[in-house]
Length: 110
Image (cartoon, rainbow, N blue to C red):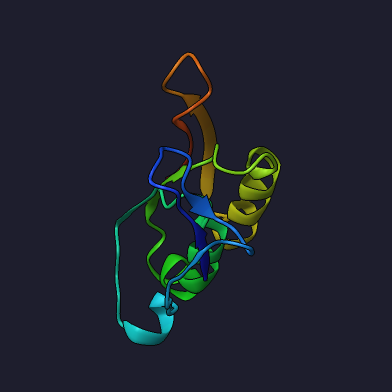
């Protein structure tokens, strides 16, 4: 995974980033993982991380709190992805700051 970081507050995952970070899918390295709550704020890598733990999500039906403001399309791609990976969950979107930063998509088991 490539990561753009210049020492400021705008660091994020990006294909043309200046740093390479080795990543693995949690489903591959922790096949028996049984989370009951998953919180992700990983600078634009949320969708990739969710896909990498799809089996664990399907197996344990955890509560989810996923940052939905790092990429412009997060507001519609992340809910679609959670609909696919966590059809058991009711989805809620909450903005925690007035400036649209810290917008979180919650998936709550119904």
